[in-house]
Length: 75
Image (cartoon, rainbow, N blue to C red):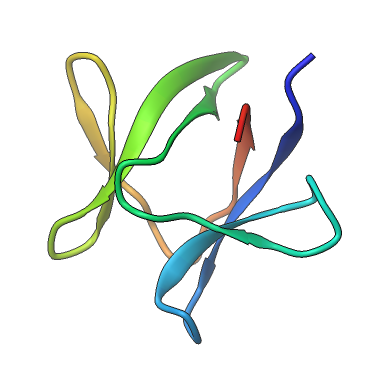
């Protein structure tokens, strides 16, 4: 089973972090891959930074909103 956690934005670090998998938050870097929950399904994605942080999927992309929390797994 893949470990699950929450994807949260850290304004102090200006990057996204995974919380709830280990004791300490895990900071993400460009190019890291994981799965994000969309509805009831987890979809594989890759995080990158343009002007804002963005997730790339097989055929699409999604800009992350800093005030939102996202369920993720497989980090």
